[in-house]
Amino acid sequence: MVQFSKDRLKSEFETLAVVHLDYLYGMARMLTGDATYSEDLVQDTYLRAYSKFDMFTRGTNCLAWLIRIMTNTYINQYNKKKKTPAHQELNPDICRDESSNNSRNAEDPQAVDDEKLLNYYVTDHVKKAINSLPGEYRIMVILSDLRGLPYQDIATHLGCPLGTVRSRLSRGRTLLKRKLEALDN
Image (tube, rainbow, N blue to C red; front, side):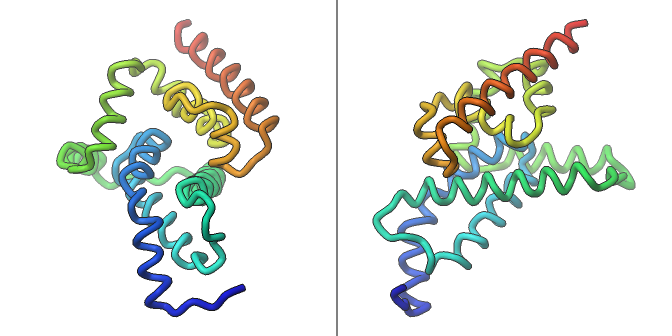
């Protein structure tokens, strides 16, 4: 492995990885449905990526590498959150109002486009069902059905076999269908 100076690594990271910030934030917004959690997820992704950037294979797709890191981070956080008891806010109305004000003030054009896309194509009913899916299925549904990525691109971005993409997407769609049917009743 070639040793790089810290200044060179920093410069190369800024050139190759930071340019994808808007895209990753938009994807994080679709995954989490929450502006604050999305910002945290993107920040964690970039921290992990920067700390391991000397291991990144130059000449490969940096965006796919970042998406893989973000996806793994999201799934790990989702599984950890699922195992911990729910946190009770002292005054949820104030927190909710501040969160909605912050999300309205976001100046990220990619996130605005994703929000418009979701609001235009997906009803609150469907958003609720998508958000209730387990992380590994939700990301497949979002990448395939909302983002429109081909299976091969999803497999490349997530670093998993094509068969895994197909099976998780099939399972995710089946779960989504059941949740939508349950919400209808």
